[in-house]
Amino acid sequence: MSQSDEILTIKGLHIEGKTDEGWSEIVKGVDLSLKKGEILGLIGESGAGKSTIGLAAMGYARGGCRISAGEIIFDGHNLLEMSNKGQRRIRGRRIAYVAQSAAASFNPTYKLIDQYSEGPVFHHVMSKSEAEHDAKELYRRMQLPDPEMIGYRYPHQVSGGQLQRAITAMAMSCRPDIIIFDEPTTALDVTTQIEVLSAIRDIVNQSGTAAIYITHDLAVVAQMADRVKVLLKGAEIEEADTRTMLRAPRDTYTKSLWAVRSFQATPKKIESTTRPVVSVQNVSAAYETQLVLTDVSFDIFPCQTVAVVGESGSGKSTAARVMTGLLEPSSGSVKLRDEPLPSVYTDRSKKQLQEIQMIYQSADTALNPKQRIREIIGWPIEFYTGLKGNANENRIRELLTMIEMDPDEFIDRRPGELSGGQKQRIGIARALAADPSMIICDEVTSALDQLVAEGILRLLDKLQQDLDLAYMFITHDIATVRAIADDVVVMKAGKVVEAGPKAEVFTPPHDPYTELLLSSVPEMDPDWLDNVLQGRASSGN
Image (cartoon, rainbow, N blue to C red; front, side, top):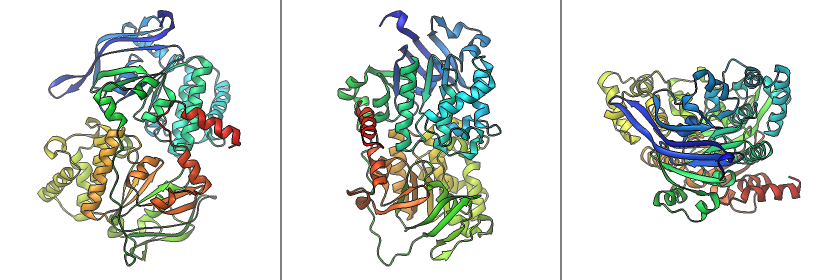
C-alpha cells in the first residue's frame, strides 16, 4: 500500500473511560489504516471498542471518554491537533457517521428531508432546493417507498427499517471521503438488507468513498469488507483480507465468533385440550384510511414461542399494537384466555394490562436514561403487585438475579452505565416485573452482537421454562426464528401468507414469499450477495 493511497491512518490509539475509581483504558493501542475506496470491517463482541474506534476516526470521543494517546491522520492532517472549528468542518462533510439507532439519532420535531438538507447546506455543498432533490434520488437508491414524498414525513411516521435507510442516505448527502457505518442494517429485514448493502457498495465503488463497517453480523461483513479487523476488549486480535479471515482465522477467539448461534430451544408440545393465552381472531386495522392489517389470525399457547416474521411494513409490530390495545382494530378481536379484550388499552383492567407485556427493540430509547435500575424495575412492581418498601426492593433483587445480573452491582446504575446486552436484560426484567402470562419480544436481539444475542435467547428460553411464559417473537432474523420458535407466522403487506409449526413452514415447498425470505439470509461467502443479485436480475425479481 502506498502512503498516497491512504485516506486514514490511526497509530497507537488509546482511549480511556471515566469510572468511579478514575480513568480506565477501553481501547488499547489499536492501529488502523484505510485506503481510498476501501471498506474495512470491524467485528467483535459487545464492549470490544468497535464503535469507540469508529467515532475516534472522526477525532471524536463520546461523553465520559477521552483519547489519551495516539495519532489519527486524515488526508495528511492529525485530527487530534486540529481546533474544534477545524474538526467541525470535516465531520459530516468529509467524514460521515451512520449510527446504529436511527430512532435515537433523528430529531423527532423535524421532517426527514429537512434533516437531510441541513448538512449539505451547512457545509455549502448544495442549496436547500438542490439538497431536497438529491435526497429524493438517494431515497430512491436506498429502496425507500414513495421516495418523492417520504422525506416530508416525521421520523415517527416511518418504520424502523425505513428510518435506518433514511439516516444512511443522510450520511451520504455530502459525498464524504469516509463513511463510518455503525451497524447500519441492524434494523432491516433480510430482503431490504440486500438492497441497502448493494446500495452502500455502489456508493463506495462509484465515488471512491472509503468506509469503516462496524457490525456483529459475520455474514454481512463477508459481503461488505475488503479487510476485517477483529477486536476483543479494546485490543486487536487479528486482521486479514476478508477471504483469508473467513477461510482460515488464526486466533481461538475469532474461531469462536465463527461458531456462534449453536443454541436451539427445546421444542414444546401443545396438548389438544390446551387453550391459548392470547388469540388474535380475524383482525383488520388501519392508520387513518390506510389498511395495514387484513384478516390476521393466530394463537399463542402457554410456554410456546410464536415467531412473527416478514419484511419492514408487513404488519408485525402493528399486530402487536392491536394486541396491547395501542391500536384499535377496525374488525376482529383479541382474546385473553377466551375472553375478548377491550380494543383500547385505557378500557382494560389492571389485570388485563398485566397479562401482556412487551420488550422493545431499542433498549437505548426504551429505558429512561435519568432513572436508576431500581426505579425502572420497581415502578411496575408497585403498580401491578402493590409491593412497596423492602418487599419491592427484594423483588427487584430477585428479578435482577433471574436475568443473571448481580443486584449489588447494578441496582443503582443508570442505563448509560450498561452495555447493550445488559440494557436488554433490564428490559426483560421490567416486563417480568408485572408477572405477565405473555411477553411480546419486538426485535429484542437485532441490535446485539451474536454472542450477546445468543445469551439473551438462552435467558428467554430458561425464563419461559421456569415461569411458563408465552412469547410472541417479532423478528426479521431467520437464524433467531430457527433457534427459538415453535410456530411461525409469515406476514406480508398486512396479511398472513403462511403459518404453522416451524418445521413445516421451513420445509419445502414454500410459499413464494417465504422462499424469498429464506433465500435472503446472508451466508458466510463473500460472493453470496453478488450471486443473489445476479440471480434475481436474470429472473426479473
